Amino acid sequence: MLVRGLILGAVVLMHTQLVAGESDADAYESRTLTVTERGEPVEFRYRLLRPATIEPATTYPVVLFLHGAGERGNDNERQLKFFPTWMAEPSLRSRHPCFLVAPQCREEHSWSAFDWQTKKTAALPDTPTTDGAAAIAALEAVLASEPAAARNRLYLTGLSMGGYGTWDLAARSPGTFAAILPICGGGDEATATRIAALPTWCFHGESDPLVPVGLSRSMIAALKAAGGTPIYSELEGVGHDSWTAAYRNPAVLDWLFAQRRR
Image (cartoon, rainbow, N blue to C red):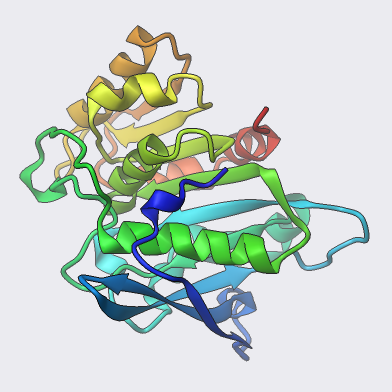
């Protein structure tokens, strides 16, 4: 079950709109929701990709994607770079039909309370950021509105700032996701016991100049020490962009979509 404590206020689904256009990314619907922050309503925008065809009596996995710092804003478009755009390609929509939820973090905010700009590890705070809570709220709104969403096949992934967010939100709701795919991020090693049993595949570029590769190494080491069996792919000679190698590898996506929560 989703951890309701992550939601900072009442969630209000405002509208759903299919965006017209010719690009693959335009297959995404535009949605908004409202959470509260310090007693005030805050509107968040996100995109939703549905399976191209929903067959009767069939359920489909749900992917929550957390973008990087460069895609922050309020245009509800910038966050569709990379993974969401690739997943909208006809070949991948056919191979892995799913609901893909792509919220957009506000400028100067973050998915994770982890101060990723310090490039150092830190303890997970008691409460999530508003934007992190809004991402979970978007996931909950999709689950509430889509009967074909498979509750036992919820996946969490993100890159860079979103990689930090993946570690953060997974630790806050360890029983929610069937698998996580954190890319070039970092987290609190002390939370490893919460997610040791969670199927995990982590990617990081060995030469990443922005997010130290040691952050992923230490999270993987902590998971193994807690009894977990994570997969770790450290890409030799690769800088910050380790997400292209991860998301464009068919074996990685096949692994992700094969996971089911018991």
